[in-house]
Image 1 (tube, rainbow, N blue to C red):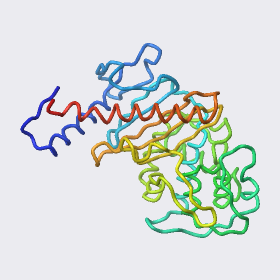
Image 2 (cartoon, rainbow, N blue to C red):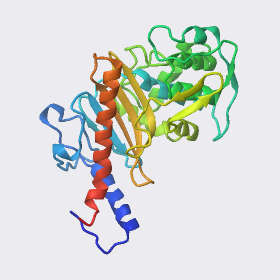
Image 3 (cartoon, one colour):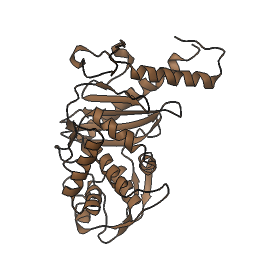
Image 4 (tube, one colour):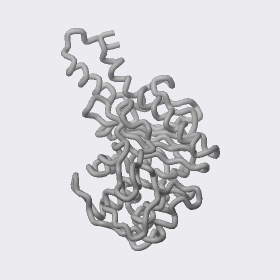
Length: 313
């Protein structure tokens, strides 16, 4: 262990962050069943034992340190249903086409009869809205990303592209532009099991999404009050713990539990991660609980690395 007893605390913190960056850029040698799913582009392997990174015991995962240019993966990176993680792309496409400045509410969008009718129908995650009400773009993005309302995802899709089908084509083009070649979007909300992706692909979206100030602000919000709807809570219960500042949950029976997350390390660096396919084919609640628990263990394990490496003890 590196000991820096006479070095100022801010220097130790910086050294720790650099050591974390170095750890995340190294190749992780995984158990035999997972070998080959993590890669380092320069081909110079560095052995890290299984206990160094507390990967989930099932499904797949990926992590990166913002600015490192390296992604570490665990588990077979084959496309699986991602449920409401699809809404991150929905928000990204909406904000790309209709950008908002920090604090700006954006245009008012009329709630149509379809969005009102879909509330509470089919066992989906929805919010009750009134046809004819006019909600701002920012308000609808809150309803999309916090309580994860599928009827709002489809409403935004129709507003942006005229139809959900047209909007899904825009989602797919955006995925291709971001290099998400193992991702397929077939709906705006993620309820369809044919909307699939990998943990590594989701990190490509997370990087771009967290560069949009409005989206970054919304996904870090624990709860908000939306006129005409009331108070809504974020389904990401890790917010405010373990440095977590976003991003999005997703859970269905086929998908299991999924979490795309962002967490601060030392206040300046951002860890990004995706944990997919936890407790698939059980219940959405069981899957989501498993994804949240696995993500917390992974985040805490990674955030502890600079502190344990650069502490006096």
